[in-house]
Length: 325
Image (tube, rainbow, N blue to C red; front, side, top):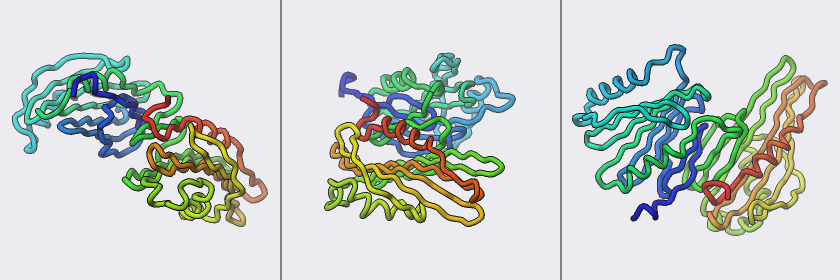
């Protein structure tokens, strides 16, 4: 495959955004936006990123690089480590340090502090002899990489793209072949109230097989299948009549709903649920935005800003491309 055929797509996760080859797989992730890890892979190639909060007394990058090399030299899993090159560079406006290593695989390690996001980031490229275009890919990833400066967080994985407010944090995730679920939430507390806003994004693969009689009717799919799934998370949820809209070229069913419980402390929740079928990916998609407030019953009311949250989130969704058109 020539370099001209090495096509890239956008990838976004936990406040990091960059371009990767279209055939790369998102294999491992963990942690949160403050401290975490992710790995992307292709044949003979591996990209790993780690990030953590900057300590009160951060170590010099050169010291961290020395410790990394010593750690690899002591590892029984790695053959003799040779430092081929070491130097300084720039990554998205930050001073960075790189180390080029050679053992049983070739590795490039990049280290930098991002003071804007208050994170220390390690980016490692590993490649074997069978890898195609490792240098081209490494340069494109680093050239496109952003680690701060987002007005909204970008999430772009396994064929879809959307944006969330920076105040929302990824709390739960399930990235599986048949079903992908991502739950984002924001919590606010005061003396007389507890408020929790959530964005639940889900997609279901092989829709025309799994939902043979329902997939072409998003409203019916929501009523006969998805409402039961939502009630496992949101008990006593009731949905009202739906309206239709469109996302890209797809017909979307949108329903509003509510739920309530409690006597002395009343918990009231409002919901907006949208569902649609994407023939390009053969998936059913569902977006649920909720606003849940717990207050003394005499003070109970539900905020309306969740409507704006839904509109902003829904307008950012692209269900069959890696980035917006």
